[in-house]
Length: 296
Ligand SMILES: Nc1nc2c(c(=O)[nH]1)N[C@@H](CN(C=O)c1ccc(C(=O)N[C@@H](CCC(=O)O)C(=O)O)cc1)CN2
Image 1 (cartoon, helix red, strand yellow):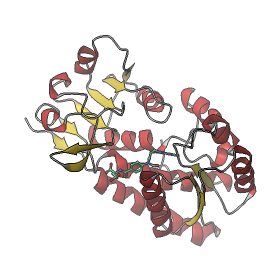
Image 2 (spheres, protein in one colour):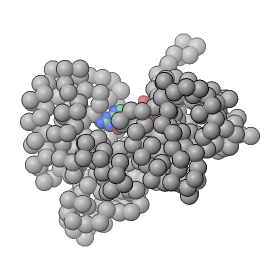
Image 3 (cartoon, protein in one colour):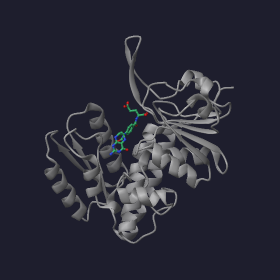
Image 4 (cartoon, rainbow, N blue to C red):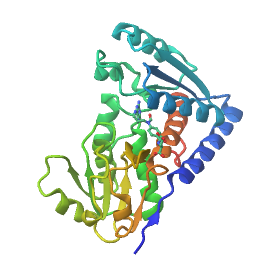
C-alpha cells in the first residue's frame, strides 16, 4: 500500500483564499481591516524567513501587517513596553512574538503580557486554560492546522486512537486537547514513554512532534494509519542540506493510509492558521461572530 499524501501547501492556499474572502467582507460591511503585529528579536535566519512570510501573506490577504524587528540585546522591559503599546493599539487585532526568544528573556512572562484577546498564537495562559476546558479560545496555529487537515481527510474521528509524540506547549499539549475535543482516545507520549514503538503502533492517528529527525520508522506505524508529521529538521545528506520530518517518510509511506510530507505538509498550514486566527481575533474584538470555517 502507498499512503495518500496530504498536501499542506495546497490546503494552506485554500485556507488563505477563505481568509481573504472574509477580510473583503469585513472591510466592506464593517470597515474592519484586521491587523497583525509580529515581533522578532535577533538574527536567527529561519525566524526571519518565517516572519517575512507571515508579513507577505498578511498583506496578500488584505490585512494590515506591522513588523517589529528588534536587536537580540533588547531588554525584557523594552519588549514589555512594546507589547503594552500593541495591546493598546486599536489597529492591531493580533500580536505574535516569534519564538525562540534570546536566552536572557523570559518567554512565559513575555507571552503572558500579550492581551489574551490579541494572542493569535494561543500561547497565553488564559487561552491554554480555555482550550483545556473546552471553551472558546485562540487555538495555537500548528495544532489548528493539523486538526483542519485531519478533519478534511477523516471527517468524524470519534473513538479513534490518537497518539501524539512530543509534549511541547506549542504543539504536543494543545494537539492532544484538540484530539480529545474530537472524541479521540488520546495518548500523549514522549521521550520517556516505555515501549514507544508499541504505543505508536496502537495509533489510528499518529502526530509526530518531537523535533528529532526521522526518529519514527515505518514499522512503528499501524497499517492504514493517518500520520501527521510536525517535525522540521535540517539535516545534511550526501553533502546536501535537506529538511526532514520526525517520521521516516520513505518507510512510513509504504504502511500508512495517509501522511503529511516535509516540507509541504503541516508547515505551510501554520502561517495560514495565523491569518485565520487574526480574522477570528478581529471579529471577536468587534463583537462579531468569528467565521466558522476558520476556527474550531
Ligand atoms: N510565535 C511562534 N513562534 C514559532 C512558531 C509559532 O507558531 N509561533 N512556529 C515555529 C516556526 N513557524 C512559524 O512561526 C513556522 C515553521 C515552519 C513553516 C513552514 O512553512 N515550513 C515549511 C518549510 C520552510 C523551510 O524551508 O524552512 C514546510 O514545512 O513546508 C512555517 C512557519 C517556531 N516558532
